[in-house]
Length: 338
Image (cartoon, rainbow, N blue to C red; front, side, top):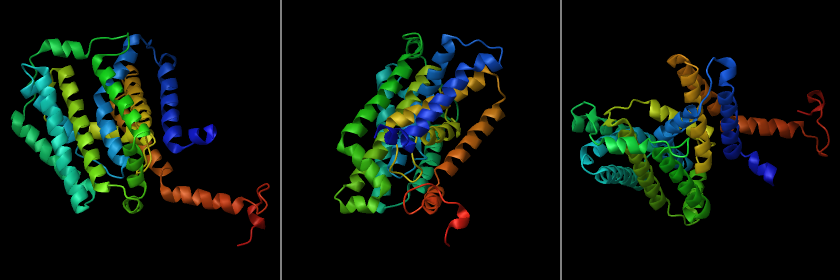
């Protein structure tokens, strides 16, 4: 039973990804002249904090069989609203960002669920609109956050390796894991991702669940942008597409299926930690930027191929053909009947 659980893709992929990247990270002194320090671990967790909530937001929608491309737009808007509304009170900035993110998710969820539209074109349109809105709010310029006390606090060293920002991000992953593992919402989320029609027949309130999922995705993305703005002391109206690419890579490394119905927050945690370790390895080893980009592209390609449903079916058919009727050893292909 335990072996079967460990070999499931949603468990095996993140365990393998974290294990291999951790080994590669520990071996950095072997293939470079750099000695690792506690700061390198701290910086890895800072990268995790920077991308983690975007990966969690995207991954939750992927489990439900959707794909929220707007997470980066909400991420940028959340950061900008935090800077503009939180100059005097950081709490006002966070509330403005999270409220706006939840509202965006609510509108998207209602449109997608109510009209039964595919999520990708809807969220792509939202992503473009949000970047335009963020640019309009800032005049196309980076805005500075003038509360240095908050900036220093969110990134101060805690317990040698952590910061308040990374601890908040980690805490939200744990909270999401508890909710999805121990509540009806988690079971139904995987159900609608695996077979939406059967879920409707079984009485699952699919529309309500989809709307709630997009609300959570929007709130998490906006909070991620809010925390990043506090850390940088500024907000950029266009973070580029890299956060989305790395979040998607983290979700796939975390065992989330492109077809939906599979994955968990703990798997997503493993995926984003693997991405953060790879980013820190590239930084410490001083690899050129294009090397890291090519590596991520190749990694995504391998994951997509391995996760392809037709490949799984082909392997299953071949194994069935090679297995003799009596369950004994494998017969040579030349002895099989056509």
